[in-house]
Length: 286
Image 1 (tube, one colour):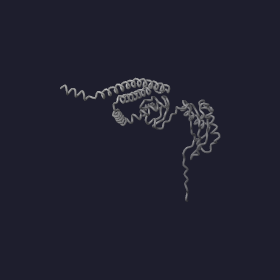
Image 2 (cartoon, rainbow, N blue to C red):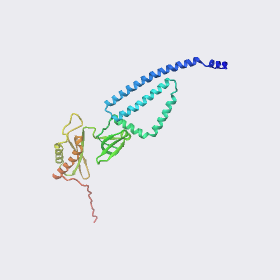
Image 3 (cartoon, rainbow, N blue to C red):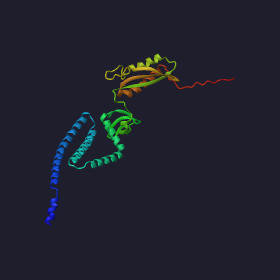
Image 4 (cartoon, rainbow, N blue to C red):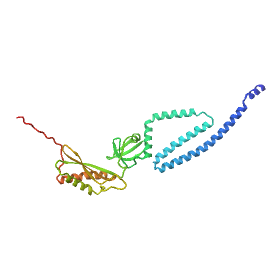
């Protein structure tokens, strides 16, 4: 029995075990150093990222959520690095997480698209809460910007939820982005009317309206004084167009007020509005 035990101990590769132990201890120490250093760097990166988002005035919900995602990703990378330092094969871990990520991404493709769209909207801010926008066939005031949807309130007090994916990748009109808006109106009157008198009457209204800007402004080079021109010679009458600039908040008030005022003025001064008509000529063959 003693001889068998001696042979077993003699077969043990003590030198290899000693070498493996030294290597493992060295790797363990390096892994511990990398862990503490990586933890410190992750905290610093998260703080730096948070300050950057706060300076950019990004929505609180967004940067909190992004911090969580970045924190998870950085810790995952740190764990993979530490596992590799300890000599454990990492390819299987990476393949497993990659497969799981692909499966989740395919299952939530629409949701992830809306999430990415929400991130883009909150980062680049093509519109903000309170803006009047037109998108996806709807028009209204932005009530709330969520991670997956944007909520708008239409003029008749309906609440519409628009997915952020289609909103960020499609065409969107923001009427509140600029300080000033141009009011374009068209008026039609009968042939034979004195164009100079019509022009003078309409321009008097535009130039005396208290909310119409009468001269260019320094902070917006495209703003100009009121303008009017003949745009179309139609089948039944002459059409003129007017262009006048107002503040964005006054747009609809001025739009309706100018239509009403011009109509009353033209009617009072005897200018007739044309009606569609057809001339029928009857030929007498007798």
